[in-house]
Image 1 (tube, one colour):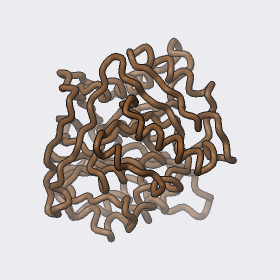
Image 2 (tube, rainbow, N blue to C red; image 1 turned 120 degrees about the vertical axis):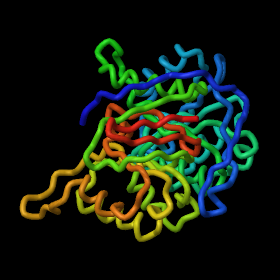
Image 3 (cartoon, helix red, strand yellow; image 1 turned 90 degrees about the vertical axis):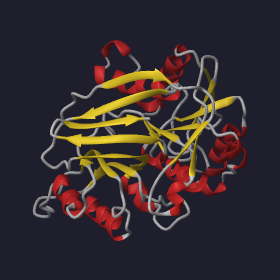
Length: 339
C-alpha cells in the first residue's frame, strides 16, 4: 500500500464541550452528538485494558510519551492482570473501566490494546455519570465495540486510533509514518482539526460528503448487528477496516452490511486497510477485497475511497468517531477533514 499520506494540522479548537447535529433520513441520525472536552496541559489520561492482556512494562513507552505531551497518566488496576488471553477477569476489567468512567479527574481513557474481551463487559458498565460528563475513549480493533455503543446509545464522540501496544519503545528507529500516526492522537485529543489524504484508486467513486463519521473494525460491526450497540449508518460516513480474515469472510460481512441496509443511505464510505489471511491452495475465493466491496456498492452514488490510512497497519491515523467530517474523493485521491 502506498504510504504517501500526510497529516495537516489546523487551528486548535476550544476546550469546552461542543455539539452539532448530524443529518440523515432516520430521525436517530439527527440526534445531537456530544463532543467531550479537549485535553489541555495537566489533564489526566487513564490507561486500562478492557480486552486483551498487557503488562505494565509494555505500556511504559506510551506513558512516557503522553507525559511528555504535558498530561498526567494513571495506570489502571487491570494492567498486568491476566485471565488467560484477557486482561484480567471480567469483574476486574469491569471494575477498572468503571472507576475510570466515574473518576472526574480522568479526562480520557486510553485502551492499552485490543484483542478480545470488550463485548463481555460492555453491558455491565454504568455510563450514567459518563453521559453527564463525557470523556474521550481511545482505541481501535476490539474497542470498536465502545465506539459503536457510545454512538448508538449515548451520542458521544470517541477516538479511533492506535493504542499503547503500538507505541515504539525506541523512537530513534521508528518509521516516520509510525511517529506521525501516534502524534495524530495528541492532535485530536487537544482539539486540532486534521486532514488526512489517500492516494487515487481505480475503484474509488468520486464525490463529496459532509456528515458524522462512524465505523471501525468490520468483523466487530457485524458481531454487534441487532444488539443495542448496533450502529445506525443513515446519513453518515462509514469507515471500515479488518485484519486476519479470508476473502470469503470479507464477502460475507459486506453482504451483511448490504442486506441489513447499512449501505443504503450512507453519505460516504471509507475503506481502510484489509490484511487478508492466506487462502488454502485449491480453495481460493477468486475475488480481491476491491472486487468484493465494489460489487456491493455499484448501485450507490455516494463517494467511496479505498486504501485509506486507517486499520491494523502502521499508517493508522486517529479519527474522531461521531464527529462531523468532510470527505472528498476525486481523480487526485481522497481527503477527510474534521470540522
